[in-house]
Length: 361
Picture 1: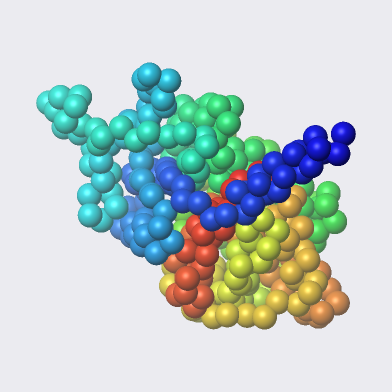
Picture 2 (picture 1 turned 180 degrees about the vertical axis):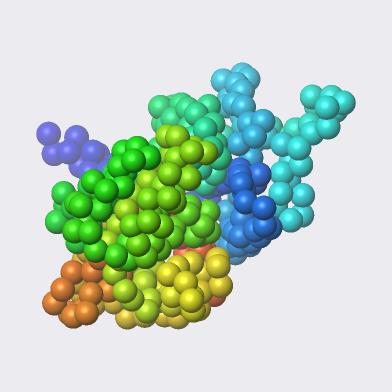
């Protein structure tokens, strides 16, 4: 009847209005502050935590930091809690002393609820190298309980493999540098044959790098083969890739949130190097993208089912007509570099999720 339809319509309108109204939420940032395996100091994680904390305050969002080391989930009276070690003023976790009692080791339990809590796992690393499968299972379990996680475990798993990301991007019609996986320590000749035996080439780990360390240029078969043998000697099952070298003066990082480009930056290749990581000191500046670059960047994000990602690409010579070379999709992009040239971007990201309809895109 008309009256019933009218009531349903009014309820629907009320629901839509509530969905579109900005509402505060609780944001949990998962980190692994001891993940560095290198013997040099890296301050990027502490800087990122500070940036997220400051940005959350600006948009009135309740934010908490937890570390995967020592983390466990508990339940009491039908409520769910995260239990984590505390952090110092530099954003580093305070690991307990062996003599500390349990209640002294942990910060106060953090109540989480799928209706008002977003989880942002940023320290999932490389399993059995800089992380534990237990940590991944913890996030998967929370996803099964209905929590929104950004990135999702599925997106993280795809982006954790440069080889898989390359395959998926190609399947979706994107252009990438030709890439070949090395299957064992004496596989270099076969891999190079697939690449056309053209040097120089890029040798990199498939499972990612730390601040750009893990990506090298190889000028000859002799140097490539000996490098592969050495790496496989110390980590027999390390996933290695060889990739065609595309000479460029810069690459581009594009930050994408829910199929919308929030920002982009040009990262100049470091003098005497092949890398362009802002964390290594590369110069950055804003850049205007072509329509083709915008389209392929968004398509790369969609290919990995990423909601908040950083897409890296090398521009083609004819930017207006030729597709860019998609290098990788980062499921946990840092915002420090792009925030310096586009201030307020991090706060804009956090504010986006104050609208509850954006939780279920």
